[in-house]
Length: 137
Length: 292
Image (cartoon, rainbow over all chains, first blue to last red; front, side, top):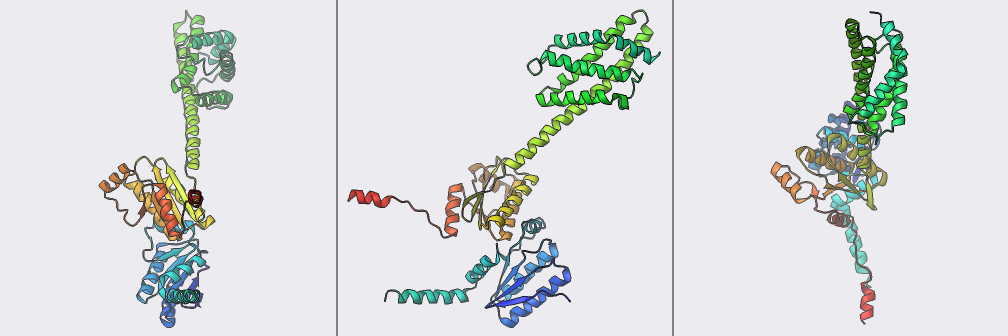
């Protein structure tokens, strides 16, 4: 049975959807992803849909569901690389994906995740502060 | 009555008819000698009359869609399309064909003065034929006009939606004219495609050129903003005039989760802030140096 791989990258999970999602696949993805979030205690989920060309209302709802479920488990969701046609379709369907963060590409999505989840950012800031403290000496 | 005889008679009297017709046209008050020269008009008329007489020579006065009328219809179509483009009014274009009716019946009248019954039948025949031709003219005339309108609409759609890259990562899209569904679609597609192409994270939608905002236009704006957000970019609406703000509030449209600014300048300012950019005045130091 076809499955979409979920990669763990530090405190985040990375999902790249490279096929057009059909309903069963989307449901499996939702299931697997939430299981992974609880298993790894991930702080953020990044979903790359740049290769997805067709969406329907079900797919939109699944994305919204993943976001809400992750939020409950203290993980932020970022959807990246949405195609213009997909964005227009979702808007015409009335699905504006409230609660889902979006970014143009994976790189910016990662930046956004770092910004939204403060664990790593705090570490960075501490490092910076340490560096700043060391500088004058 | 033999239609062939009538046809032959007309063919024999061709020169008279042409002279008569030209006289009619030139005498008319609505003659547009500013749009078409008399020689050209004469050439046009002769060509049309030639074709018409050749067509009726088969004795067919009834069906103008039969093969022998093909050439006449073509000529007529060309004439009326050119006239539509040159800016002739529908009335002038139609009168051109109808004045031929007068010329033809005049010739028949002279010929059959002492046979009113025959004359009546022939006149009816000519009337029918030319009425049909004038309908055909009018159809092509309208078609010509519609083509002009369609072309203009296309041009308008193309020129009115440029996406401007005002800064690295900031796009601006000035909208001029009323936003309807089809234009919103084009605007949205252009904007989203440009966001992908340039990797911009902020889009400024300037609506200072939009004459009025009603609930439908607002709906279109909200859709565009939502779609930009889904792509992962932020959208700012600028150029909101006082009247537009009033209408929006009176209509009860909720724009509270959309960033709005009154001018493009302030929208750009906000965009700079969001990208952690600063615009500073330079040259200050040199002045202070001078003062010292």
